[in-house]
Amino acid sequence: MKWITRERPKIDRLACPWLIRRFIDAHAEIIYVPETEVLTQAALRNATPFDIPGVEFTHYDDQCTFDYFIKKYELKDPALQVLAPIVRGADTDDHALALQSSGLWAISAGLAYNTPDDDELLEKGMVIYDALYSWAAHLRQEKHTQSPTEHLLLQIYKTYLSNKTEKKPRVPAWTTNLKNMIQDHIDTNLNLNLKIASEELDVNPAYLSREFSRYFDNLSFGEYIRKQRIEKAIQLLEFSEDTLAEIAYLTGFSDQSHFNRVFKAHTGQTPSEYRKFVRKSKGNTKR
Image 1: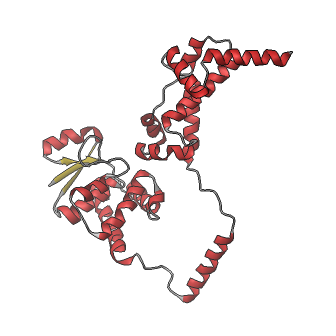
Image 2 (image 1 turned 30 degrees about the vertical axis):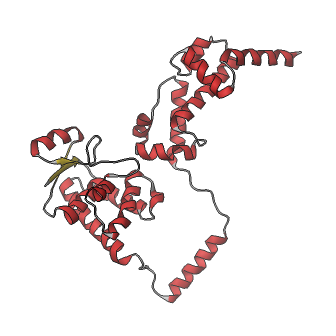
Image 3 (image 1 turned 90 degrees about the vertical axis):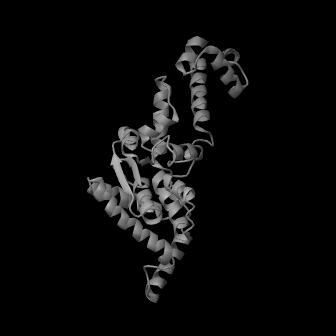
């Protein structure tokens, strides 16, 4: 069998070839080419493409390509069930899925950085995944510390940590960058969507979509963007002399009718009613 995918592999494109050769076809040929050439070369070489959009062997919802191979070939090995969330977490930047995900990502990124040849990189990756499989199959209960003294020191350290004030979960760095990006796009009246944001942040779009609401007021990406537009519109209604049509344009709505509809859904008033209410309130204050 021949399998083909994008060049410069790091997680899925090393884990899947390992899975293929160890559990599906020991003599499988793995081909790496530029992303724009994958489908063309797949047809020319009679190879099956994987880990690119629009093909069978790819991501589905929050599952990565490694998950799909396991499901497709009905691989029941218990150790693979342990490996799957580790690979998924590393591939989607969701390191909360497994303790080992961040380590796998760090090793894979460093391996790719040190190894410019993709075929050589795959051979090194096979060693990594062989080792990870052995750990999952035989060594998960093993601890690095073995002596009673080491265990005692670790227990003391854990007790010390448990007595410290619990800290809030660390907020991912991409959230700050994304907030700034959204504000920039709102201020300049540019359209921003999840695909553009994920590319600029270099974050997997499925992960970004799933995690977005955790850090943005429990709102979806679209809901949060609309909220920001409405807040900008409120400022313009209160402090500018722009017409409603101009404000609709400046806040990124397709037309004034769309602006009126969304604004009323958020505030209970049309933009015109809101502006009249604010000006009347200010007039009463002056008196």
